[in-house]
Image (cartoon, rainbow, N blue to C red):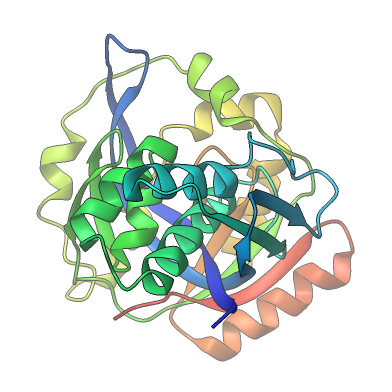
Length: 283
């Protein structure tokens, strides 16, 4: 098999609490992560003399700084081989939007290479390689809804999330994650303890009061349009609306699929923002 096609999903953070800063500059977090049905497509061509990457999106780098390139390089290093692979990314997930597209692409490369070479690495070993690429990569290799702690690498399966429709709204500008964390003022609370007791399947009515994102305070301060998107989603019947990751993407959660469809159409007709109607990817 000389060619392999791998779907590469986006993610949203349904809960994100920053609990501290480490000496190495990384931030300790607790976050609830779910993949959603919005996909890039990663195509691997094998038997190549070196690693290369191309992408359909003009603002995605096609050099060693691309996370997919780095993933392939680290995989071959761990395998002790100087093989090559040509990586093509058909980009649908908005770039620098808090949706983890680059990390998902890297995870897709690692999964594809591991499959092609006959599964030389266990799931745990592959996640260790992924962590060297970026903090979100292990989550995409985990392939479950998860609570992530530490820098995002301490993963625990979360099974108390009901099926929901998601209206994802992307305002079209980019927000660098490093800038958001640099400008974050830490206000530590005991929300981590309370979060452990949440079961959204049993009491979905609590969702809007329990889901929050500490990074919103930074991103909304510079881009108040995010607040307008949240308000629009809530006015259209979303159970909750939240910025994902460092933003600027905002999602609304809907119990009723028809109501989500109407909300998506309503926002799209305004012509101000890109929208996607998707589902949570649950086991």
